[in-house]
Image (cartoon, rainbow, N blue to C red; front, side, top):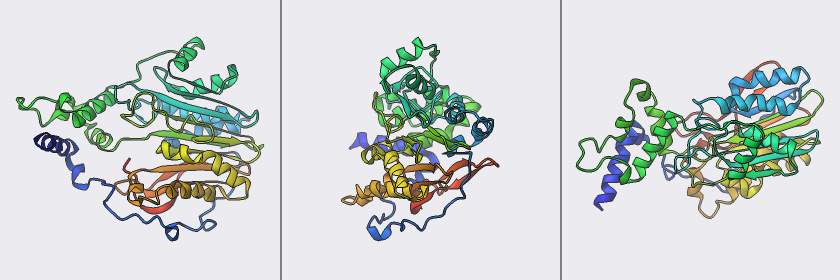
Length: 384
């Protein structure tokens, strides 16, 4: 009982002000009966445009780079990669690539997939280490092998053989976040009871003013593990489509865990005759419903991209009918566009914990902008 009390006290200290508004899964009732679902066919639609790029919100600032490629007649796959590789390169974005939050052993493992609509090819890598641009490695798998999916040490060796440079992907900020997470979950990774500093492990780690600026972010990712990912889809003026999904996966995951991002038909699906779809969020839930494929097939039947995304979310929610209180614990988002340049996105919850509206990014050839996702439940949710 004393051990539990010490751990509980440390967690509350580490969380600081966040603890006062802890995002507990039982904080509100969660209706998941059929009556609570929005009616398909009543959601907001967006004007069709070609060329068009749609992506998760963390790619917003790079959409112009992809659109320039499309407007100059470049390939749709090059366009989406121009967006996501800049996020992979950014050490301040810990959702993908360099600086991504590591697994429970402190190792950054990355996953990615690409699909090229015009040639109907695909490539993917999973649990790759030391290579900051897994999306480009996935493209190389597609172009230079007769495989689709390479994982682990084999993926790393393949990348090195193809000229990719290895590097330490763990930035100082991500390393400190990992150490803080270990301290929050194990007494062995914080000062002992005989130390006057045992209550404030995080303060020890944040020993400079620059590092102190990371405190709120680190407290957040320690208490609420991230599923950071970026999905990006594009259709050009001719109607050709490509897509990519890249991620550092669920933070603090078991080594070797792979989510939906590199799985063709789940985290990404492209059919050049119909459209494309991808996902961010809790990958395990998407894998179970083959969400990307589900959305493309719904669009094949005539659904709008938004309604097709909502259909996939219906299927996710349906899996939790026996225990509806657990649904609020996670979040998932779907993105889609069709060959005509219509687009949409759906999210399980309308707001992230803390009340921030769930958004996605779109560039319709005129300008890039952020647009709210259409939620299945217009409430706050998604703790995990």
